[in-house]
Length: 388
Image 1: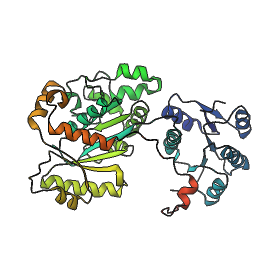
Image 2: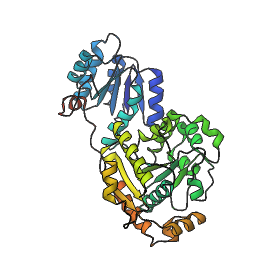
Image 3: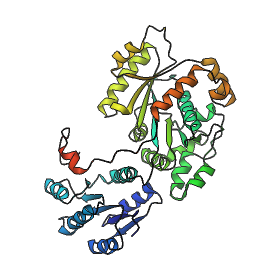
Image 4: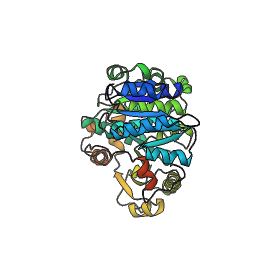
């Protein structure tokens, strides 16, 4: 067995198919029995293993998990339910994680995290812009952040999730020849070369995906399809920048759940700050807090009575970035379909967006290894309800 293969033992066909779609061309080997798995392992240890338990569970999968763990192979066990006895047995067998029926959707993410931690793959950072109300300038910020990252030589895809009235294509004076719906329909056969040839490419170096030139096809994209597209894109780019989030609907949450960073965009206006306060409180309830949530003040004016300190006190989180105002430079750039570096390279917006890019994407570092089942259960911060 190739050491980069992921071994699947007694995993249901639908779960197996979903993993193949999420993991892309990475090799998987699916077998039905522990005996077949041992025969395969005799030819080489896998990269990781997923073992499904019967009901009631037999000892074979636990013994296999113990043997694989002893070889340093991360193991994830799939059980019918979250039973405390099964969880304890999984711990003793050295399993990295345990998922119950109904949680199989988390499996691809856990495997991708293991692969990323091992250095086998690099997943894009996903940055989602969320304006607290209309007119905050989020699209301008998203396009310029994407351009700044592309100027650093990074592969960047800018995604507009406003299917009906998105502005990204207009800002960059582009035609959306290949759409989000096209990627969703063809992800199973798209490799890096074909993806680059298909997705529209701006002169700034940014690849752009939207739906606005094919609005009717957007009806095919439910939240699950959007999440699938984003998972696919993060395997092929260094950064994915999301614009077009305007509400708290299911589609927005499909994107926000995958985002490494959520940029909450506000301006120095009372209605905007009050909206930011409500948004931030809601995001904290959902667990979108800490380093994931960055409060950005756009069109910042030092002389405004609504100071940075007032905004921080009202919203309840620190201001992570400010971007100055250059209405005339931005207007000229939009009308030409270019970014400010070309139209007004000395604009304060250029300086501030580059600072934002340094915050969003500092020097690349190897991600921390995912916490093991044991670490999650017995860390001082853990609250155990079976498993979190």
